[in-house]
Image (cartoon, rainbow, N blue to C red):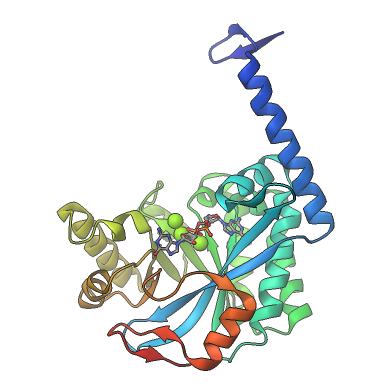
Length: 285
Ligand code: C2E
Ligand code: MG
Ligand code: MG
Ligand code: MG
């Protein structure tokens, strides 16, 4: 068999390509079963207010233990879910489950949920969000959606409408992985958001790369001009945390403050106040 590759060039379908396609199909089938049985879990990673020194939220991160294989990295299966359209159902499950768990947290702790660009394209995201809020009783002000810049690129007008609908519900929107995609001032204008999440690749190089420091400063300056909050992701060291504080970054998330943990572990940490504050002390809620 032959396959059309690139600019109209035909090439024989190689055995490895066959193999890869088959493995992906199997993964997709298992993912479909997992969705039917809601066989996923969420982990939660703390987000802290650097100035007030307290825990203010958590990002929900999807986990899947594939039967016979063990845990699959979300970056891998989310991509398969996007391509197969399964992301709509999986994303709805994530929203519902994250809101359900967060409703049991103290009232000053929010939950941030990742949504994929495909959820904007394939479904009515505002409706899904509204029903997750209603089912859980979580106040809209305690839900934040993390979107990547991919959303801004496809289907601009429809995406803008959904963006407005979601914010009209009182739900916040954060731009995830900011600085890695095609972010421009123009997009911040068409898609007014509440928060920017500086990508962890820039945070990782603080103290080592002057250009990363300059990028972080520039993002913080721009965010001040647009009056949006900033959270730094992937903060692993005290040095990174204090650099960010000195530069006026409001919030942080990363291994330094806490790794993603199960919902039960997060809730009991929350009640014990077991998260690390910027100066190494423990912070409660
Ligand atoms: P993301 O939204 O940028 O999530 C942050 C990722 O960074 C998480 O990886 C988290 O475990 C990791 N991380 C957090 N702090 C640190 C740190 O200090 N150092 C390092 N090296 N890594 C840190 P994870 O859980 O593997 O998720 C990867 C990506 O998968 C997420 O990136 C997100 O794009 C996607 N994802 C996860 N859950 C969902 C979901 O429910 N829906 C959708 N659509 N995508 C999801
Ligand atoms: Mg995220
Ligand atoms: Mg991120
Ligand atoms: Mg990232």
